[in-house]
Image (cartoon, rainbow, N blue to C red; front, side, top):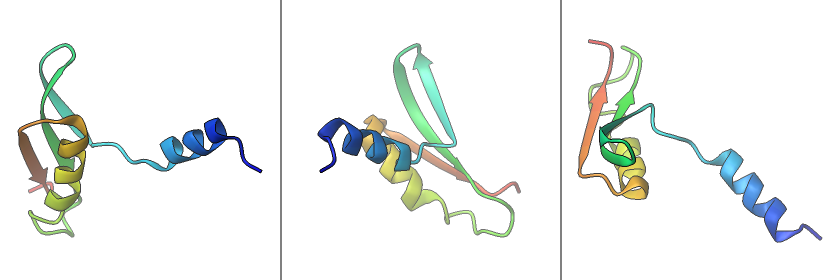
Length: 67
């Protein structure tokens, strides 16, 4: 049987994080930026960035593809 704290640790390890988070001031995130390589369209990272923004409760989302 797996201990609940071990399950939580595994869940945290599997969670991904935003490529960049822009802060208005320390402790107050304002936007998430998802960076993709130039083989992806500009909007390719938006859905992923929206997920991060929801978790961080930030109002702005940006996506970049190195162009």
